[in-house]
Length: 344
Image (tube, rainbow, N blue to C red; front, side, top):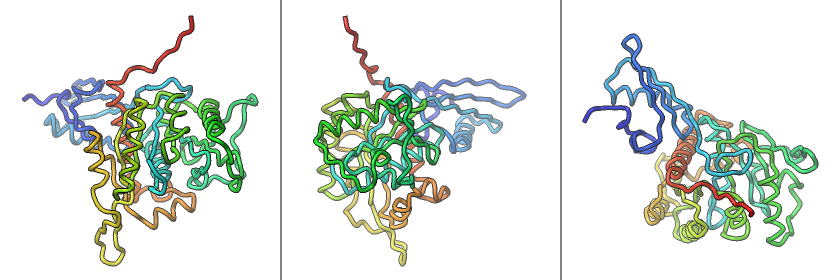
């Protein structure tokens, strides 16, 4: 088979560029091949890796590769092109930790990102991102919120509207109304991705979000043990009922690395996330360890992607975030366009 750009295997998606809507241009100048490629996932940090792979594939030692990123558009929410839910069937699996680091990872990978904390009753993103308790979003025209910008991403959370001691003693419709207001009355600024940190469960908030905006997809966070997997399945089934594609499963607390012996220990069983992913025909997007240092980072309001940008766990979050974006791109190829309602 002739080695061409179109049959080059994309290392992130394991599909050829011919199978993807990859816009490419190639020309030869002074015996050097120049290739320009437009991809649907952020490419910051992998340019040299892709150049070397493509150079080897084409057997071109003198190759210049110019990569561009253009995110797909899957929703009509003003100010953002794609809305991705990070969800779990139950609490205590580290979903919010995963959500904030995925958002930061997408930004480090080269995209414009927002983070919406949809947990009205127990918002935590303000603490995790180190936002001062008295810092409030500005209000424009007595109606719109300006999201708080921190660590390169835009953030909106109920924790920024009330004190950290104020309980939300609200029934479901009131919580759903608050989410609608934060979602539609926040002035998101031309985002590639809006990551929504969902509350645990399959209730009013999940249904409100699914009905109010065309979700590009959902990421399910679980731990490996059976009780968490059971609830993860419920989350997947819930999104299936409202026609939201599952981009994949992230397994958190997959293992613990002993400081003394250096061995990995499976505290909460093994391979649970991969089993659920296989069961539902989706992808295992990443596995993250049970790590006391990660807990310290989050409690101190300094996620590792910000506080320790060269660490192995930061690289893992960035890689995982890029895969999420890539899966969204692939799912978007076959998705129906967002519905338009016309009154006659």
